[in-house]
Amino acid sequence: MTERTGKRVVYLASAILAPIAVLCIAAAPLLFEKRAGVPVLVVGPALDAIAGWLRGLGDGSAFEYRFGATAWSFFDIAPHFFAVSFLYVASAGSVGLAGGMALGLSLRGRAAAAVSSFLGSLYAIPDFISAILLQLATIAILDATGFKIGRISHDAASEAFLLLPFLLLTVYPLAFAFKTTLRKSMDAEREPYAVFALSKGLSKRTVRLRHIGAAVVPALSAELPTLLGIMQANLFMAEYIFALPGITRFLFQVAFSGRRPGWIEEYQYSLAVSVLLGVMLLYLAAWGFFRLALYAVRRALTGER
Amino acid sequence: MNARLGLGVAILAALIVVAVVPWAFTSFPEDYSDTLRSVETPTGTDWLFAPEAPSPYYPFGTDQYGYDILTRIVYGLRWTLGCVFIVAAARTVVGGGIGAARALAGRPGADRGVSPLAGIPSFVVAFFVLYPFSINSPWQGWRLFAFQCAVLSVLDLGPIVGATAAKTSALLDAAFVEAASSAGAGRSWKFGRHVMPFLAEELLESFADQTVSVLQLVGRLGVFMIFIGGTVMTFDPPILNSTTGEIAGLIGLYRVRLLGARWMLTWPLAAYLIVLAGARLFSSGLRERERRRHRLYDSR
Image (spheres, chains in turn purple, cyan):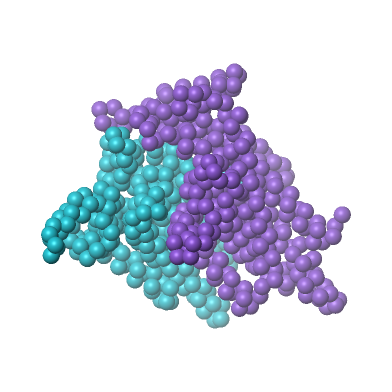
C-alpha cells in the first residue's frame, strides 16, 4: 500500500468512526445512575438511546428535540445557528491568518521580537480569561469615559455579529499564524531559490511576497487542523460567555437544561448528537474554507494560473 | 537556574505553602459564611448585608451568600494545585510511557492530518463524562476529585504520546546509541542508560506544559459549572455552588458578577492568573534551561 493510499484509508476510517464516537460521547451522561446514593454503571439506557437515535434516522425523529413544552426540528433552527458560528470562525480566522501572515513576512529583528513577545503573551492567556477580561475592560472604559467599545453579550436587540467575540476569536489565529509564518519564512530566506532571486536583482519585497510568502502558505495549510482545533475550543467559550446564538451554545442551552428541576431527566440525547455532528461539520467546513482561501492566496502570490 | 525558572519555582512554592496551611492566611474557618452582621458606629448599630465590598474585616469582600472570598480562595487553592499537578503528572507518565513504548516497538506513528473528531474540544468530552457525577454527586470531596482527575488524565494524551515517541525515536537513531548497539547493548540497556537521561528532560518539560494545559481545561469546565470537587445545586431557589471553592471554578461561578459586586470575580481571577503565571514561567524557564544546555553542548 502506498503512503497516499494509506492516508486515504486513515481518512476514510476516521470519517466512519467519528459519528460512532459522537454517538458514544453523547451517551456518556446516561452511563451512570444514582442508586441508594451511589453511582452505578448502567449500560442499558445508553444503548437504548443509541438504538433509538439510529431508528429515528428513518422517520426523522433523531433530529427532533423539545424546548419547554414544544417539539422542534433541529433542521429548522440549526442552519441559523450554524451560519452564526461559521461567520465568526471564517471572519476571525481570515483576519487572524491574514494579519499573522502579513506581520510574519514583513517584520524582522527587534520589531519581530517585540510583536512575537506581545502575541505570545496574548496566546498564553486562556480564552475564557481573555473573554472575561474583554468584558471587564469594556465596562471599565464605559464607566470611566462613557465610550462603549461593544456589547458585552448578545441579546434579542443586538445583531448576531459582536465586536468582542470577534476580537477574542481573532487573537489566537493571529498569534498562531504569526509564529508559523515567522519561523517558516526565516527558514525560507536561506533557501537557494530565495538567495538566487535576490542575486538576480529582485527587490526584497518581491522576494518576500512571491517566493517566501508562497513557501509559507503550505506550512500554514499543514497546521490548519491544529489551528482549527484551537479555534473550535475558542468558539465554544466565546459563544457561551458572550451568549451568541451559535451551534455550540445551543448544546448547553437546550441539550443540558441544567438549571431547571429534574435536569438530568431533561438531557436530550438526540439533540446532543445532532449538535456534536453539527460541530464536526463546522470544523470540516472551516477546514475546507481555509484550505481554499490559502490555495487562492498562494496562486495570487505566485501568479500561477 | 535562569530568571524565569527561578521566578516560576518561587511563585509555585509560595502557592504550595498557601495551599498546605490555608488557615494561616485567613481569620475565618473553611465554610464560614455570614449574610448579615452588625457593626457598632458612633451613630449606633449598622447592619451589613452580603455581599459586602472589600473592607479591613473582609479584605476581598464576601459573595451573595456571605462567604469570605479570601477564605474561599486560600482553601480552594489546594484543589486547584492538587488537580493540576496530579493530572499533569499522570498524563506525563502515561502519555510518555505509551510514546516511548511505541518508539521502542518501531512504530512512532505519523501525522494523521485532519480528523472530524478534532472539531470536538477535549473539554466538551470531559463535560459529557463528568456531568452526571459532578452535580449533586454522592461522591463529594476526595472521591469525586480522584474520579475527575482520572477522567482529565486520559484526555489530550495524543500530543504527549506523539512528542515522546518522536523524541525517543530520534534518540534511538542517534550516533551514540548506534555505537552502544554495535558494542552489544540490548534494548533495555540502551533505553535505560542512553535514552532515558535525555527523555527525562523532555518529560519534565512536558509535565510543566501540562500544568498550563490542565489549568486551562479546569477553568473551561468551571465556566460550564463543572467544578473540581463537585457542584452543589439547589432547586428552590435554583443555586449552583462549588463544594471546594477551587479557584478556576470560582471564576465560572462569579462570572455573572460583571456589573455589580465585581470584587467577587476579580479576586479569583487574580488568583488564577498568579497560578497560571507560575506554571507558565516554570514551563518556559525549563525550556530556556534546555536551550542553554544545548547551546553549551553545541559550542563544545
